[in-house]
Image 1 (cartoon, rainbow, N blue to C red):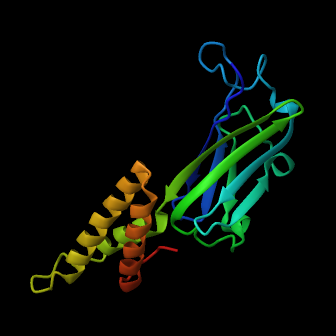
Image 2: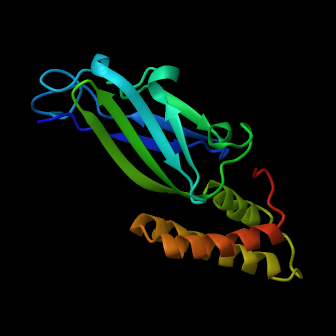
Image 3: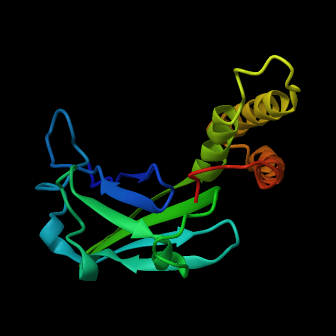
Length: 193
C-alpha cells in the first residue's frame, strides 16, 4: 500500500490554541500498512510539508510545517500548537467558534500526498453555557426562573450545535451558533475568553 497521511486537531480548554498531531505513524505490514517507512515514503524524503487552514470567513493560511517544525513525523505523540496569531489574530486571544477546514500536504521528490477534513469548534459558547448554569441562584426561594430558563435554553441549543457538527450539517451549525452567541452576549459569562 501507499503512504496514507492522517492527523488530528484538538482545541485547548481555554479556546486559545489548536493542536496539530500527525497520526500517520510508522509502517507496519499488518497494523499500519499506510505509515512512513519502506516500502512507503520516509519522513526524510519530504521536500515540503504544509497545513492549510481555511476559516469560515474563507480566509486561508498556509503553515510551513517542514521549515518551522519537525513535520512530517512518524511520532504520533509529537504536537504543534497553532494560535490565533497563525490565523492573522492576536496570539493569546480565543479562536472563534466556527467550522474550520484543514488540508495537510507532504511532498516528496516523486509524489505529493494530501489529506483533509473539516472540524467544528465551539469552545467559547460551551464555556458560556456552563457559566450560565454556574450563575443560577440555587438558594433562593422567591427568585424568578429567568436565569434557569436561559441556561436550559442555551444548553438545548448547545446540544443541537454539537449534534449538527457531528452530522456535518454546517447550515444548522452556523444558525445555532448565531443564536448561542446572542444568548451569550446577554448573559454574564465568566472566565470565558
